[in-house]
Figure 1 (spheres, rainbow, N blue to C red):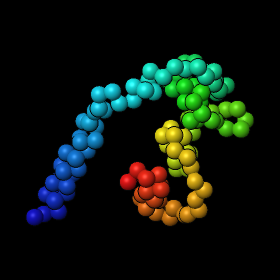
Figure 2: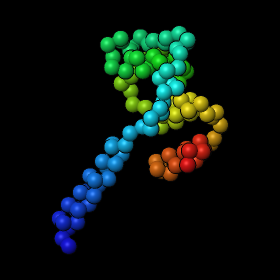
Figure 3: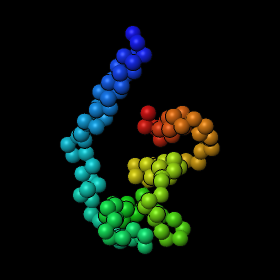
Length: 123
């Protein structure tokens, strides 16, 4: 088999498998407790997230629930990239798990993500 045919076959297989992740849907009722939860907490706003920003509603809601906090200067900086540490913190807070103090280095990205998932007892 030529390199061109192998490459074409590999690309086709990758495209087919990439459809599986996007074609899945949530189970009925999944997430309703978050959507229907009463919002008794005060709305949190950030100076750098205007009302016209596409994620303003979501940022305010998650900040009100203490899942997102923003920076010490009172800004949220919605255009910044989320670091791995920030993402792990968001996942822990959103899931309601208690974070433990862990000291390990993530030298390999895939291994680091697997360690986080094992630590959180997700896998």
